[in-house]
Length: 156
Image 1: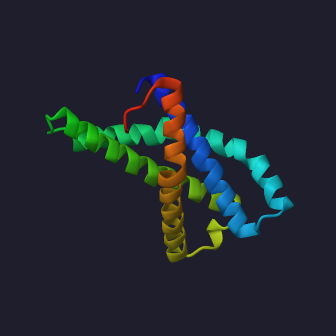
Image 2: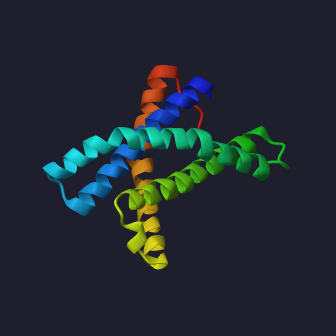
């Protein structure tokens, strides 16, 4: 992917994931009502901006470093590309999920009242939801949009 394509891909992915995971979390905690919608609409743009900037500056840098480290002895370009896609996908999911779920717990004042076990269980619940939402809804939509705008993007 070119840098421009990577930016668009990241923006679409962050918008889809931040929007859907925020809505899901708020709906689960407060129920679907007018107050939930108001809070959601007020918080979604800053959440997407945070996710996009964090992804570009931190998560993508970390995934690039991990890719270089875990593929350093490999010579087969196809194997490197496949492994790089897997590393990038899982690194982004884990880092972004941990960061965004922790940010949400801090913002709603819940983190200080949780035990370590509650925090870990909450993270795995969020991670499981994020994985399925990403794979079943967000990534297929992002790939369709990217294919229409720039041709089919390479995986990873």
